[in-house]
Amino acid sequence: MSEKDKKELVDKTELLNQVKKEIEDMPVKELVSVMATDLASVGFRRLGMKDAKQKDLKQAKLAIDSLDALFEVLAPHLNKEENDVLKAALSNLKMYYVKETK
Image (cartoon, rainbow, N blue to C red; front, side, top):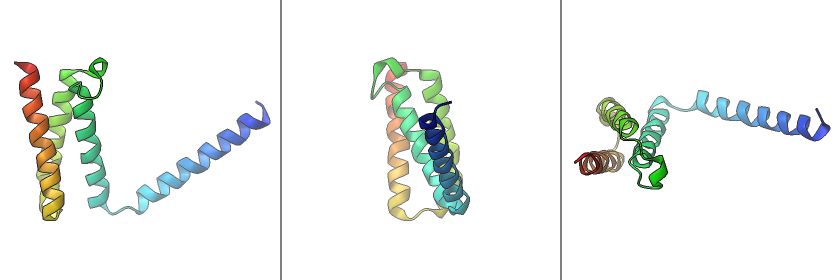
């Protein structure tokens, strides 16, 4: 392994450790909110909204159902704005999924 490769590996390891530490220190509400946002993003991608090549309706349905379940648990801990944003994303995902499956 070259010195350059070793340095890159060390840099990546340090970055991973830093991210791990940030996640460990993150309040659960914030972590779950990030997960919900990621699920919404994945759902839109799997509906083919960004790239038709990524379209996979089974995966989109799993992302939507997962977000729906997560939202139910998370909603009581969100402020109105956060709640409205996630609810709108979930509603749009469901609407686009129905359109895609007709």
